[in-house]
Each structure stands twice: as C-alpha cells, then as structure tokens.
Length: 118
Image (cartoon, one colour):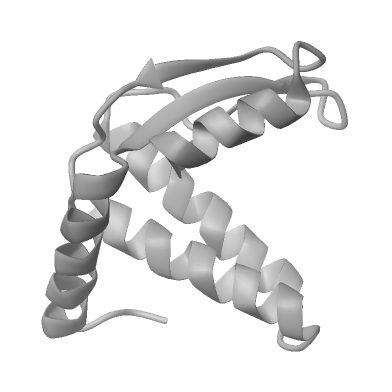
C-alpha cells in the first residue's frame, strides 16, 4: 500500500516523537536459519531488550546509531506495524506483508549507505 504525502508526513511526525523517547538504530545479527548476517531497524530500547533476552547466544551490534526520520523509515514503520498486526490477528497475507517489510528495511539500509539484506 502506498502512502499519500499527508500520511507519510503524519507517520514521520509520530516517529519523531517516538525518537525523543528512544531513537532508532540499525543493528546486525546472525540468522542461523539463513546462515548469514542480517540487518534490522529497531528503537534503541527494543534493541537493548532483545540483546538481554538473547544473552550472548546470538551476537548483535549496532551499526548505525540515530537513524534519521525519513520517508523510507516511515514506510518501514507502517510495513512493520501492518505485518505485526496481521500476525497477531492471524489474518491477511502475512507472507506478503513480511516480504513488504523486508523490502522497506532494505530501503532504509540503502538510504543509510549499507548493504541490503538478501
């Protein structure tokens, strides 16, 4: 789903507000199911919680601190929200939503001059 300029601006405003509490980061970790490194976007508090939950079993490291709020980040946030909501409800084409979320993550990575996920 494409967002209008007004919708994008609204999401960016919400992200800017959220960033005042916990800024966004890009981190890298190893995905054993894919047998490769993957890069993901998350807020800093979420990163710290995930890192504690994983202990040292799966190495994680921040590769970009303070990701700027841009159109690409807004599109990622909407895709992430839609995929999570569909997963929780158990309806919708979850596979397509996850694919869209992956594409949006790659847009953010490329915008931040990083190698996209495969």
